[in-house]
Image 1 (cartoon, one colour):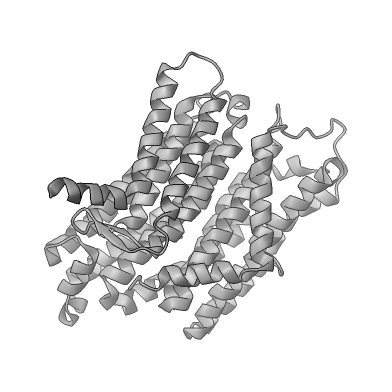
Image 2 (spheres, helix red, strand yellow; image 1 turned 180 degrees about the vertical axis):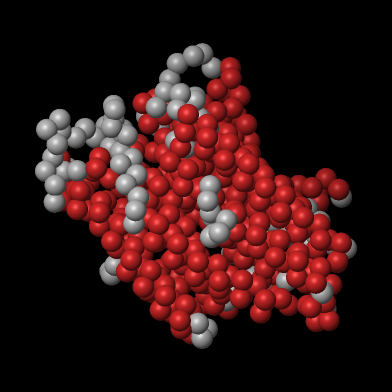
Length: 483
């Protein structure tokens, strides 16, 4: 009976089991394989991601609890796992070939990408604060190591150290909030916490403090203002594929568990935490966009851009209800594709002494490769939310949810911020189209896996912009049973 129960649990968590096994195999193969190129481990990792994706598709539409009610496989988790697996596969494609040019052609890089993805998958299926914390630390520790992979560059070590210190600090704050919730309720299950808390406890100072601690902890994880100070340095110093992982997957994972914790565990405090997230949304989108204007390093610009986009996503948290949450899910998919596309373009220009990290590095790209310049233009227009791109569709639903929820001024400020963002995105466009190619020319990476990643991100961005209906329906179906 116990064996059958355990096998049922393992079957429910089979995507995580497959991902964990593949990650361990990659690390072992890297250890025992003869010295030489490690690109083959990257391809093997992609096969592992595809195997995990295939296993996940077998659970589509199902809702199953496992491990004594601590793990939940449901449509909400299913949607985010798709985002994480697609992001992981694209980042692995971007990394193959690029690592060798950066002098970090090591197999453990791919294994750590997989372990980080495993942590994200655990996070979104956790309905128990302990499992949530374990998943979060699995992801965070993997990224701490990945951020410092450029051993020859001092800024990479600084990025890893800053991320480690701030990540540890945020984890401690969140853990303190978790402990306080446990002390007040005697349980760490999300639904059990909600059922234990009565209307009379909503004004309990200890409960409010626990809520504030959780908001602060999640604020660090998603890089919301004023908890964002470490992010630009980490983006700039970390290897570009790692910065892409942070932007497209790690911060999205933090937002996903934020939704589950606050909507499921403490809905009785919704008036209070809605006000906090309203304030964070305003600050985050405004500070992110305004500071991004002054950046000349494109990775730092993308760091502040990602901060601004977290501000937009928090609009959905404030709006709440099915429309607001489904708009968040749709926008996370769009955001992952267009952000990974821009990072892939940075890697495309990273050849020899040119790192592709300065806006000036894109000078004359339209003359050198009109197709590459057009792809970058589409990604940037989508990030800015210019119609008829996918980014416009995502923002339309987010801002519409705010208006329907009565937060008209929040939507107005978001539209103003979107207009501000056009300015700094267009700086790259001006460099590509309105400046002459430098005398030394412009060399592009010949990596075929990178070009596949570019094609997939571009195709996805265009497809959602032209025909968003199926993606929106998937997002709506994914939030139906969240409450």
